[in-house]
Structure formats: C-alpha cells, structure tokens
Image (cartoon, rainbow, N blue to C red; front, side, top):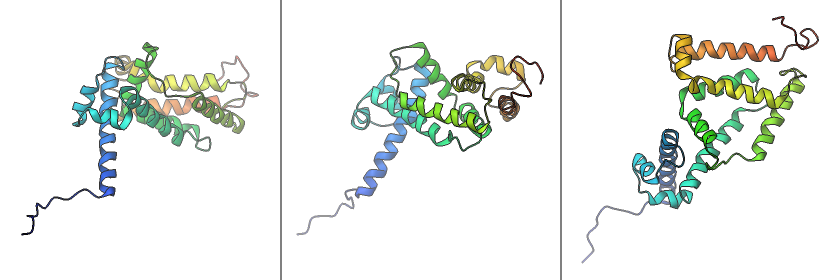
Length: 215
C-alpha cells in the first residue's frame, strides 16, 4: 500500500534563500526601530524578535547575537551612504538625498544621538569609511565645489550637522518654520537653503576674500 501523500514538500534551495533574506530584512528593520527608541544597552533581543515576528534564536543564527545585528544594521546604512556619496554626483544632490532620507526616517538621527551618548555602543564605521568620505570631499574641492581655503573635514562635519539638526531640534524647527519636519513644505524650504549654502561654499575666494561680509 502506497503511503498517503500529505501535499507538503521540502522548500527548494531558492525558496530557503528568499525566506532567509526576508527574515534578515525583518530583523534589521525591527532592530532599527528598537535601537532608535531604546539605545543599544536598553534594547533586548527578545523585543527585536517579537517586533519582527520571528524566533529570537534567529538573531544568533543570522547575526551572531545582538552586537552582530547592530553592526549589520550600521553597515547597511554606511553602504547606502557610499552608493550616494560619489564625488561625481553634485554636492547639492548628495545633501538633498541625506536630508530626504533623514526626514523620511528619523530613526537614523536618533541612532546617531544614542551613539554619541555612550562609548559602549558598537561602532561599525571604520577608518577606511572616514578616509573614503574625506577623499570624496577633497575631490569636490579640487573640482571647485568647495572653496580652496575651506577644510574638507570641517565642511563635512558641518553639513552632517545641518542634515541632522531638524530631527535633533524638531520642536525648534516646528516653531521656526510653522510646520513639522515631516511636512513636504519643510523639506523644500530647508533643502533649498542647504543648496544655496553649498553654492556659497564654492564661490571664488578671489572675489570673496576671507573675512568678507559680501553676500
């Protein structure tokens, strides 16, 4: 007598890969929400797993634990940065991408704040990442997008601060602009001003010498 068929089958290798990628994606998204809300030390892997709707053992299986998951989340953002921060892309387009991304997902800025508050938070950003970013800034200065008398490191830090500011100072931004930062009008007004600031940074220093107050 032939065994009764149940209709169930083992998943194909391609299906297992897709399932694994979906699970990892759920965990990364859930981790970003939990870490942004509670910080690294205040986040429990059980809460991440519950938010993702998966067994918490899968965090160890796919990422080696809480720290590995945090580093994977950071690396994903850093890789996205590298894709957009190409020296061949105009500075204006780059900063508008950063602004749009941060306003669209304030968790990014909150994670940066948590990291600034504690030296115990894992840091996936390597010196090679910093060197890459500075090389891009120097190329922009060579091309004339940044005035020759400006320090690329200082310019980069200032621009990072300006893109993070709306989330960090959300109440102040709302009072100044009369709308919340998730209002499209805010992104347009603030982004247009950032673009104009970048244009000023690239002005010819021969016509606008250091210390000049000329607009």
